[in-house]
Structures are given as structure tokens and as C-alpha cells.
Amino acid sequence: MSKASYPTGVENHGGSLRIWFLYQGQRVRENLGVPDTAKNRKVAGELRASVCFAIKMGSFNYAAQFPASSNLKRFGLDKKDISVGDLAEKWLDLKKMEISANAHHRYCSVFKNLVPLIGARRMISSVTKEELLFIRKDLLTGQTAPKKSILNGSKGRTVPTVNYYMATIAGLFRFAADNGYMAINPFSSITPLKKSKAEPDPLSREEFSRLIDACTHQQTKNLWSLAVYTGVRHGELVSLAWEDIDLKAGTMTIRRNHTKLGEFTLPKTDAGTDRVIHLIQPAIEVLKSQAELTRLGKQYHTEVKLREFGRSVIHTCTFVFNPQVVRRNEAAGHHYSVSSLGAMWESPIKRAGIRYRKAYQSRHTYACWSLSAGANPAFIASQMGHSSAQMVFSVYGKWMPENSGEQVALLNQKLTDYAPYVPHRLTS
Image (cartoon, rainbow, N blue to C red; front, top):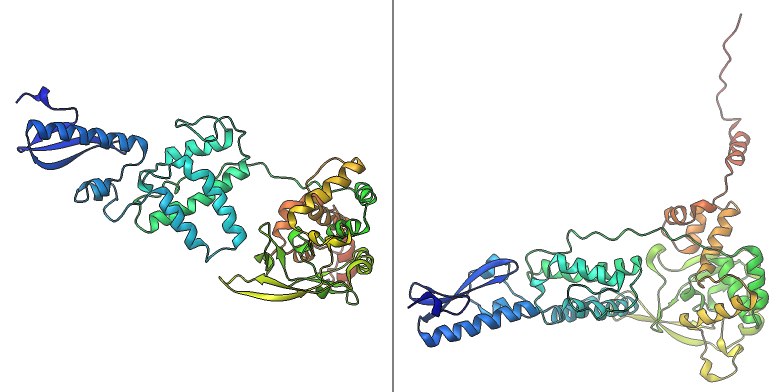
């Protein structure tokens, strides 16, 4: 029988038929174990064509097509294989017990964007580093990658967002490699994109005064004043209850955080729970003003999710900032959501004619003002909920005053009595 009568990729091997095709850039051969007949050659040609098509579309499952093949070990597929979509679903389900509901929601959002780009039906073991780098480029530029992109024509993401997306999906591939779904993790040598350091953009004292004057309700004035005077996170700000505040001692204890999903959780873990903030006098005056509006309000039994999966506690809360004070109807709810603060910030910013910043600059304003006044960075870090002063130094360093002269004067005053006397050398 002439060689020309064999379909492309079909050949005789010891009297039986086998096919060859390219997989992950390598030529592989698979024995079919059937006699070399005209009918079998035609069927073998059709099988080979379907295999090549599945590889091209990213849906080829080597282990399912050739379960006894010796090539499975060659490509690290001898243990098991699974589609990207199925593994993503499994991994996200397992992550529920490790992370908060808010973090899990962000993970799901990332996967919703990235899994279609990779290919939900393709095998996880077939994904290459090159493809992931093209996907990263597609995310960054919004331009067309070598494959048709769902981002085609859309505006590209920022570098911090792209790095977050890639770092999140990298967890899936580490899980795949650790559990035998793939031999080599393609993310192992992908480094984050370099990004410019984001500079804080605090309000000046004059801008702050204009912002407060532009607020149309006393509660709104009090809310943003307290935010600037304490530097609390916005989720902590809307979670504040009068039960957390001791005006006589001048302290405010941060016990809760409100997430974008509408849940109350424990505060962020940087410095642990129950962070005590020591209030400056302007903050105390703001709270005294707010007490006239909400201190005698209704108490609510509030469920607070603990970090341990499935556990929660009940806090009794008379919320410091209550939307019903401004909008006198039950639909307003008894505490603000984090997402509502954006509009409460933008309106007075526009009315005051102040250059726009995001509302989170209230936190940066506290840090920059405190450092400019000469406050200890370690104290500021503890007030803001950071585990150490390193974050303060790295983010707000340029706001620290050049007070070397003051420090030398202080040391001269304090250490003069302790310094050993060094006699001058006698001169003739």
C-alpha cells in the first residue's frame, strides 16, 4: 500500500495504525491498536483531525482521549486533569473558609473577567506562560491579544489593577501545581508590573474649612470632620456606635468594619481588633455636637462576622451617624453604607470649588497633618491601624518636618547631665 494513501498524520507502525500531532509545541504519537485497513485509516484520519481541532480550541483533554498513553507522564498529565472553569469553581469554593465574604466577592469578580480570557473549557495543564503574558497585556492596554478578547475595544486597566488580577489568578495555578493538575506552574516566573508610587493628596487646612462649610447638614459636617481628625477607614466610620466612645476618657474604640457587601466584620487585621483611638480635642468637640443628634437613638442588635468560618457575634449599637437624621424615613436605614460616602463627599467638594480627590483622602489628610505637626510615626500608625510605623514612613515620609535642630536641642537638654566629661588637651 502506498504511503500517499494515508491521511495526514496517520501512519503504519508494526502493522497497526498510529497518529501523530503537535501538543504543547512537541510532536507526539499515539498507537490506536487497530489493523491497518482502508476503513481504519479513514477513521484514524478523522480522529486525528478532531484532536488537532480540540488542541487549537483549548478544549483537548489528553487523559480522557488517551487514558493509557505513556505521553501522559511526559506532559505531567498522568495524575489528573481538569478544565480551567471547573478548577476555578472548586478553588473559589475552598477559599470561602479562608477569607472574608468581601474578599471572596472580589476574587469572584476577578475570575469572572479572567477565566473567559484563558478559556473555561480548556484543560488547566495546557495553559502556558506566554498566553498569560498576552492576557496581562490585553488587560493593561485593552487591545486585541493573539486570540479574540472580551476586552477588545475597551479601556485598559491600571497597573495596580492588572497586578491584583494576576496575583489573584496566580493562586489558582499554585493550587493546580500543588495538587497534581499540572506539572509546572506557569506563574512561577511572572513578576508584577512596575508601578509608580501613589502620592497622598491631602486637603489643606483652608480646603478642609471650605469643605465643612459646604456641607448642608450638621451630621455631614460632623462625619467628615471626625474622619479627618481621626483617620479611620470609612468602613470603620459608618460602623461607629456610641457604645464604642468614652468622651470623658477621650477615646474611641474601633470594633467593627462595614464591607461593600453590607456585612459587619471585625476590623482589618493589620493591628488586630479593638483598636483604641486617642481623640484630639477637635474630635471630641465634633462628637459632642453629634451626640445631640444621635446619642439617644435606638439601639440595634448587629451581627458581626468573625474571622473563623461560620461564626459571628452580636454587638449592641447605637450608631453615631444615622441617615434618618438627614432623611426622616425608614427607607434610609439606621447606618450609612460605605458606598454612600462617595456622594456625601463629592457634593460639598463641588459646592466648595475644591479640586477633586477621592473620599479616602480624608484618611491621608489625618496622617499628613499629624506628621507635619511633628507627631511620632509609631503613634500615628497605631491610631490608623497599621501594624508598624514602616507604612507611615514609606507612604507619608515627605510630610515629616525637617526638625533636626529641634531634636539636637532636645538631646542637649536631656542628656547634658549624663554625657561624660572629656577634658581638653593642654596646650603650651
